[in-house]
Length: 178
Image 1: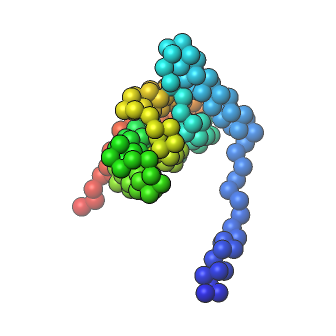
Image 2: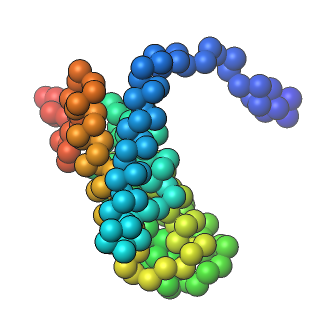
């Protein structure tokens, strides 16, 4: 038991390096532009395009654009898949806490199985169970909101960073070794 409790101390490793101040500032600017863009589109179109988890997505898209979780495939598919799972479980099993638990667990499993892991999308089943939306939730805000922030990420990251964004769109399996 004592060895188990000692694990709670962590490994005592150093903190990850801090991003340079200009990158931090650009991450904030990019995130503000993305949510501002999607919010403006929502206002003009009278469509619900904003989703709370999109704000968390902006942390990856603009702060860590080279991370696997920040690639468009992961952002869009992760959000849509998790919202779909939340809606299916809500509609079939009802708004029960145990059904939400199963929905979230299933969404996590499916994101890993499909290699579309996007941590902020993990909150979508929770959002679905709290708001109990209809099936249109998949289109607005989920799909169109995710696509909106990805569009801004592509434009912004390629304008302000020396590298290319994204690293991949759909991805490919690594070459098989003989």
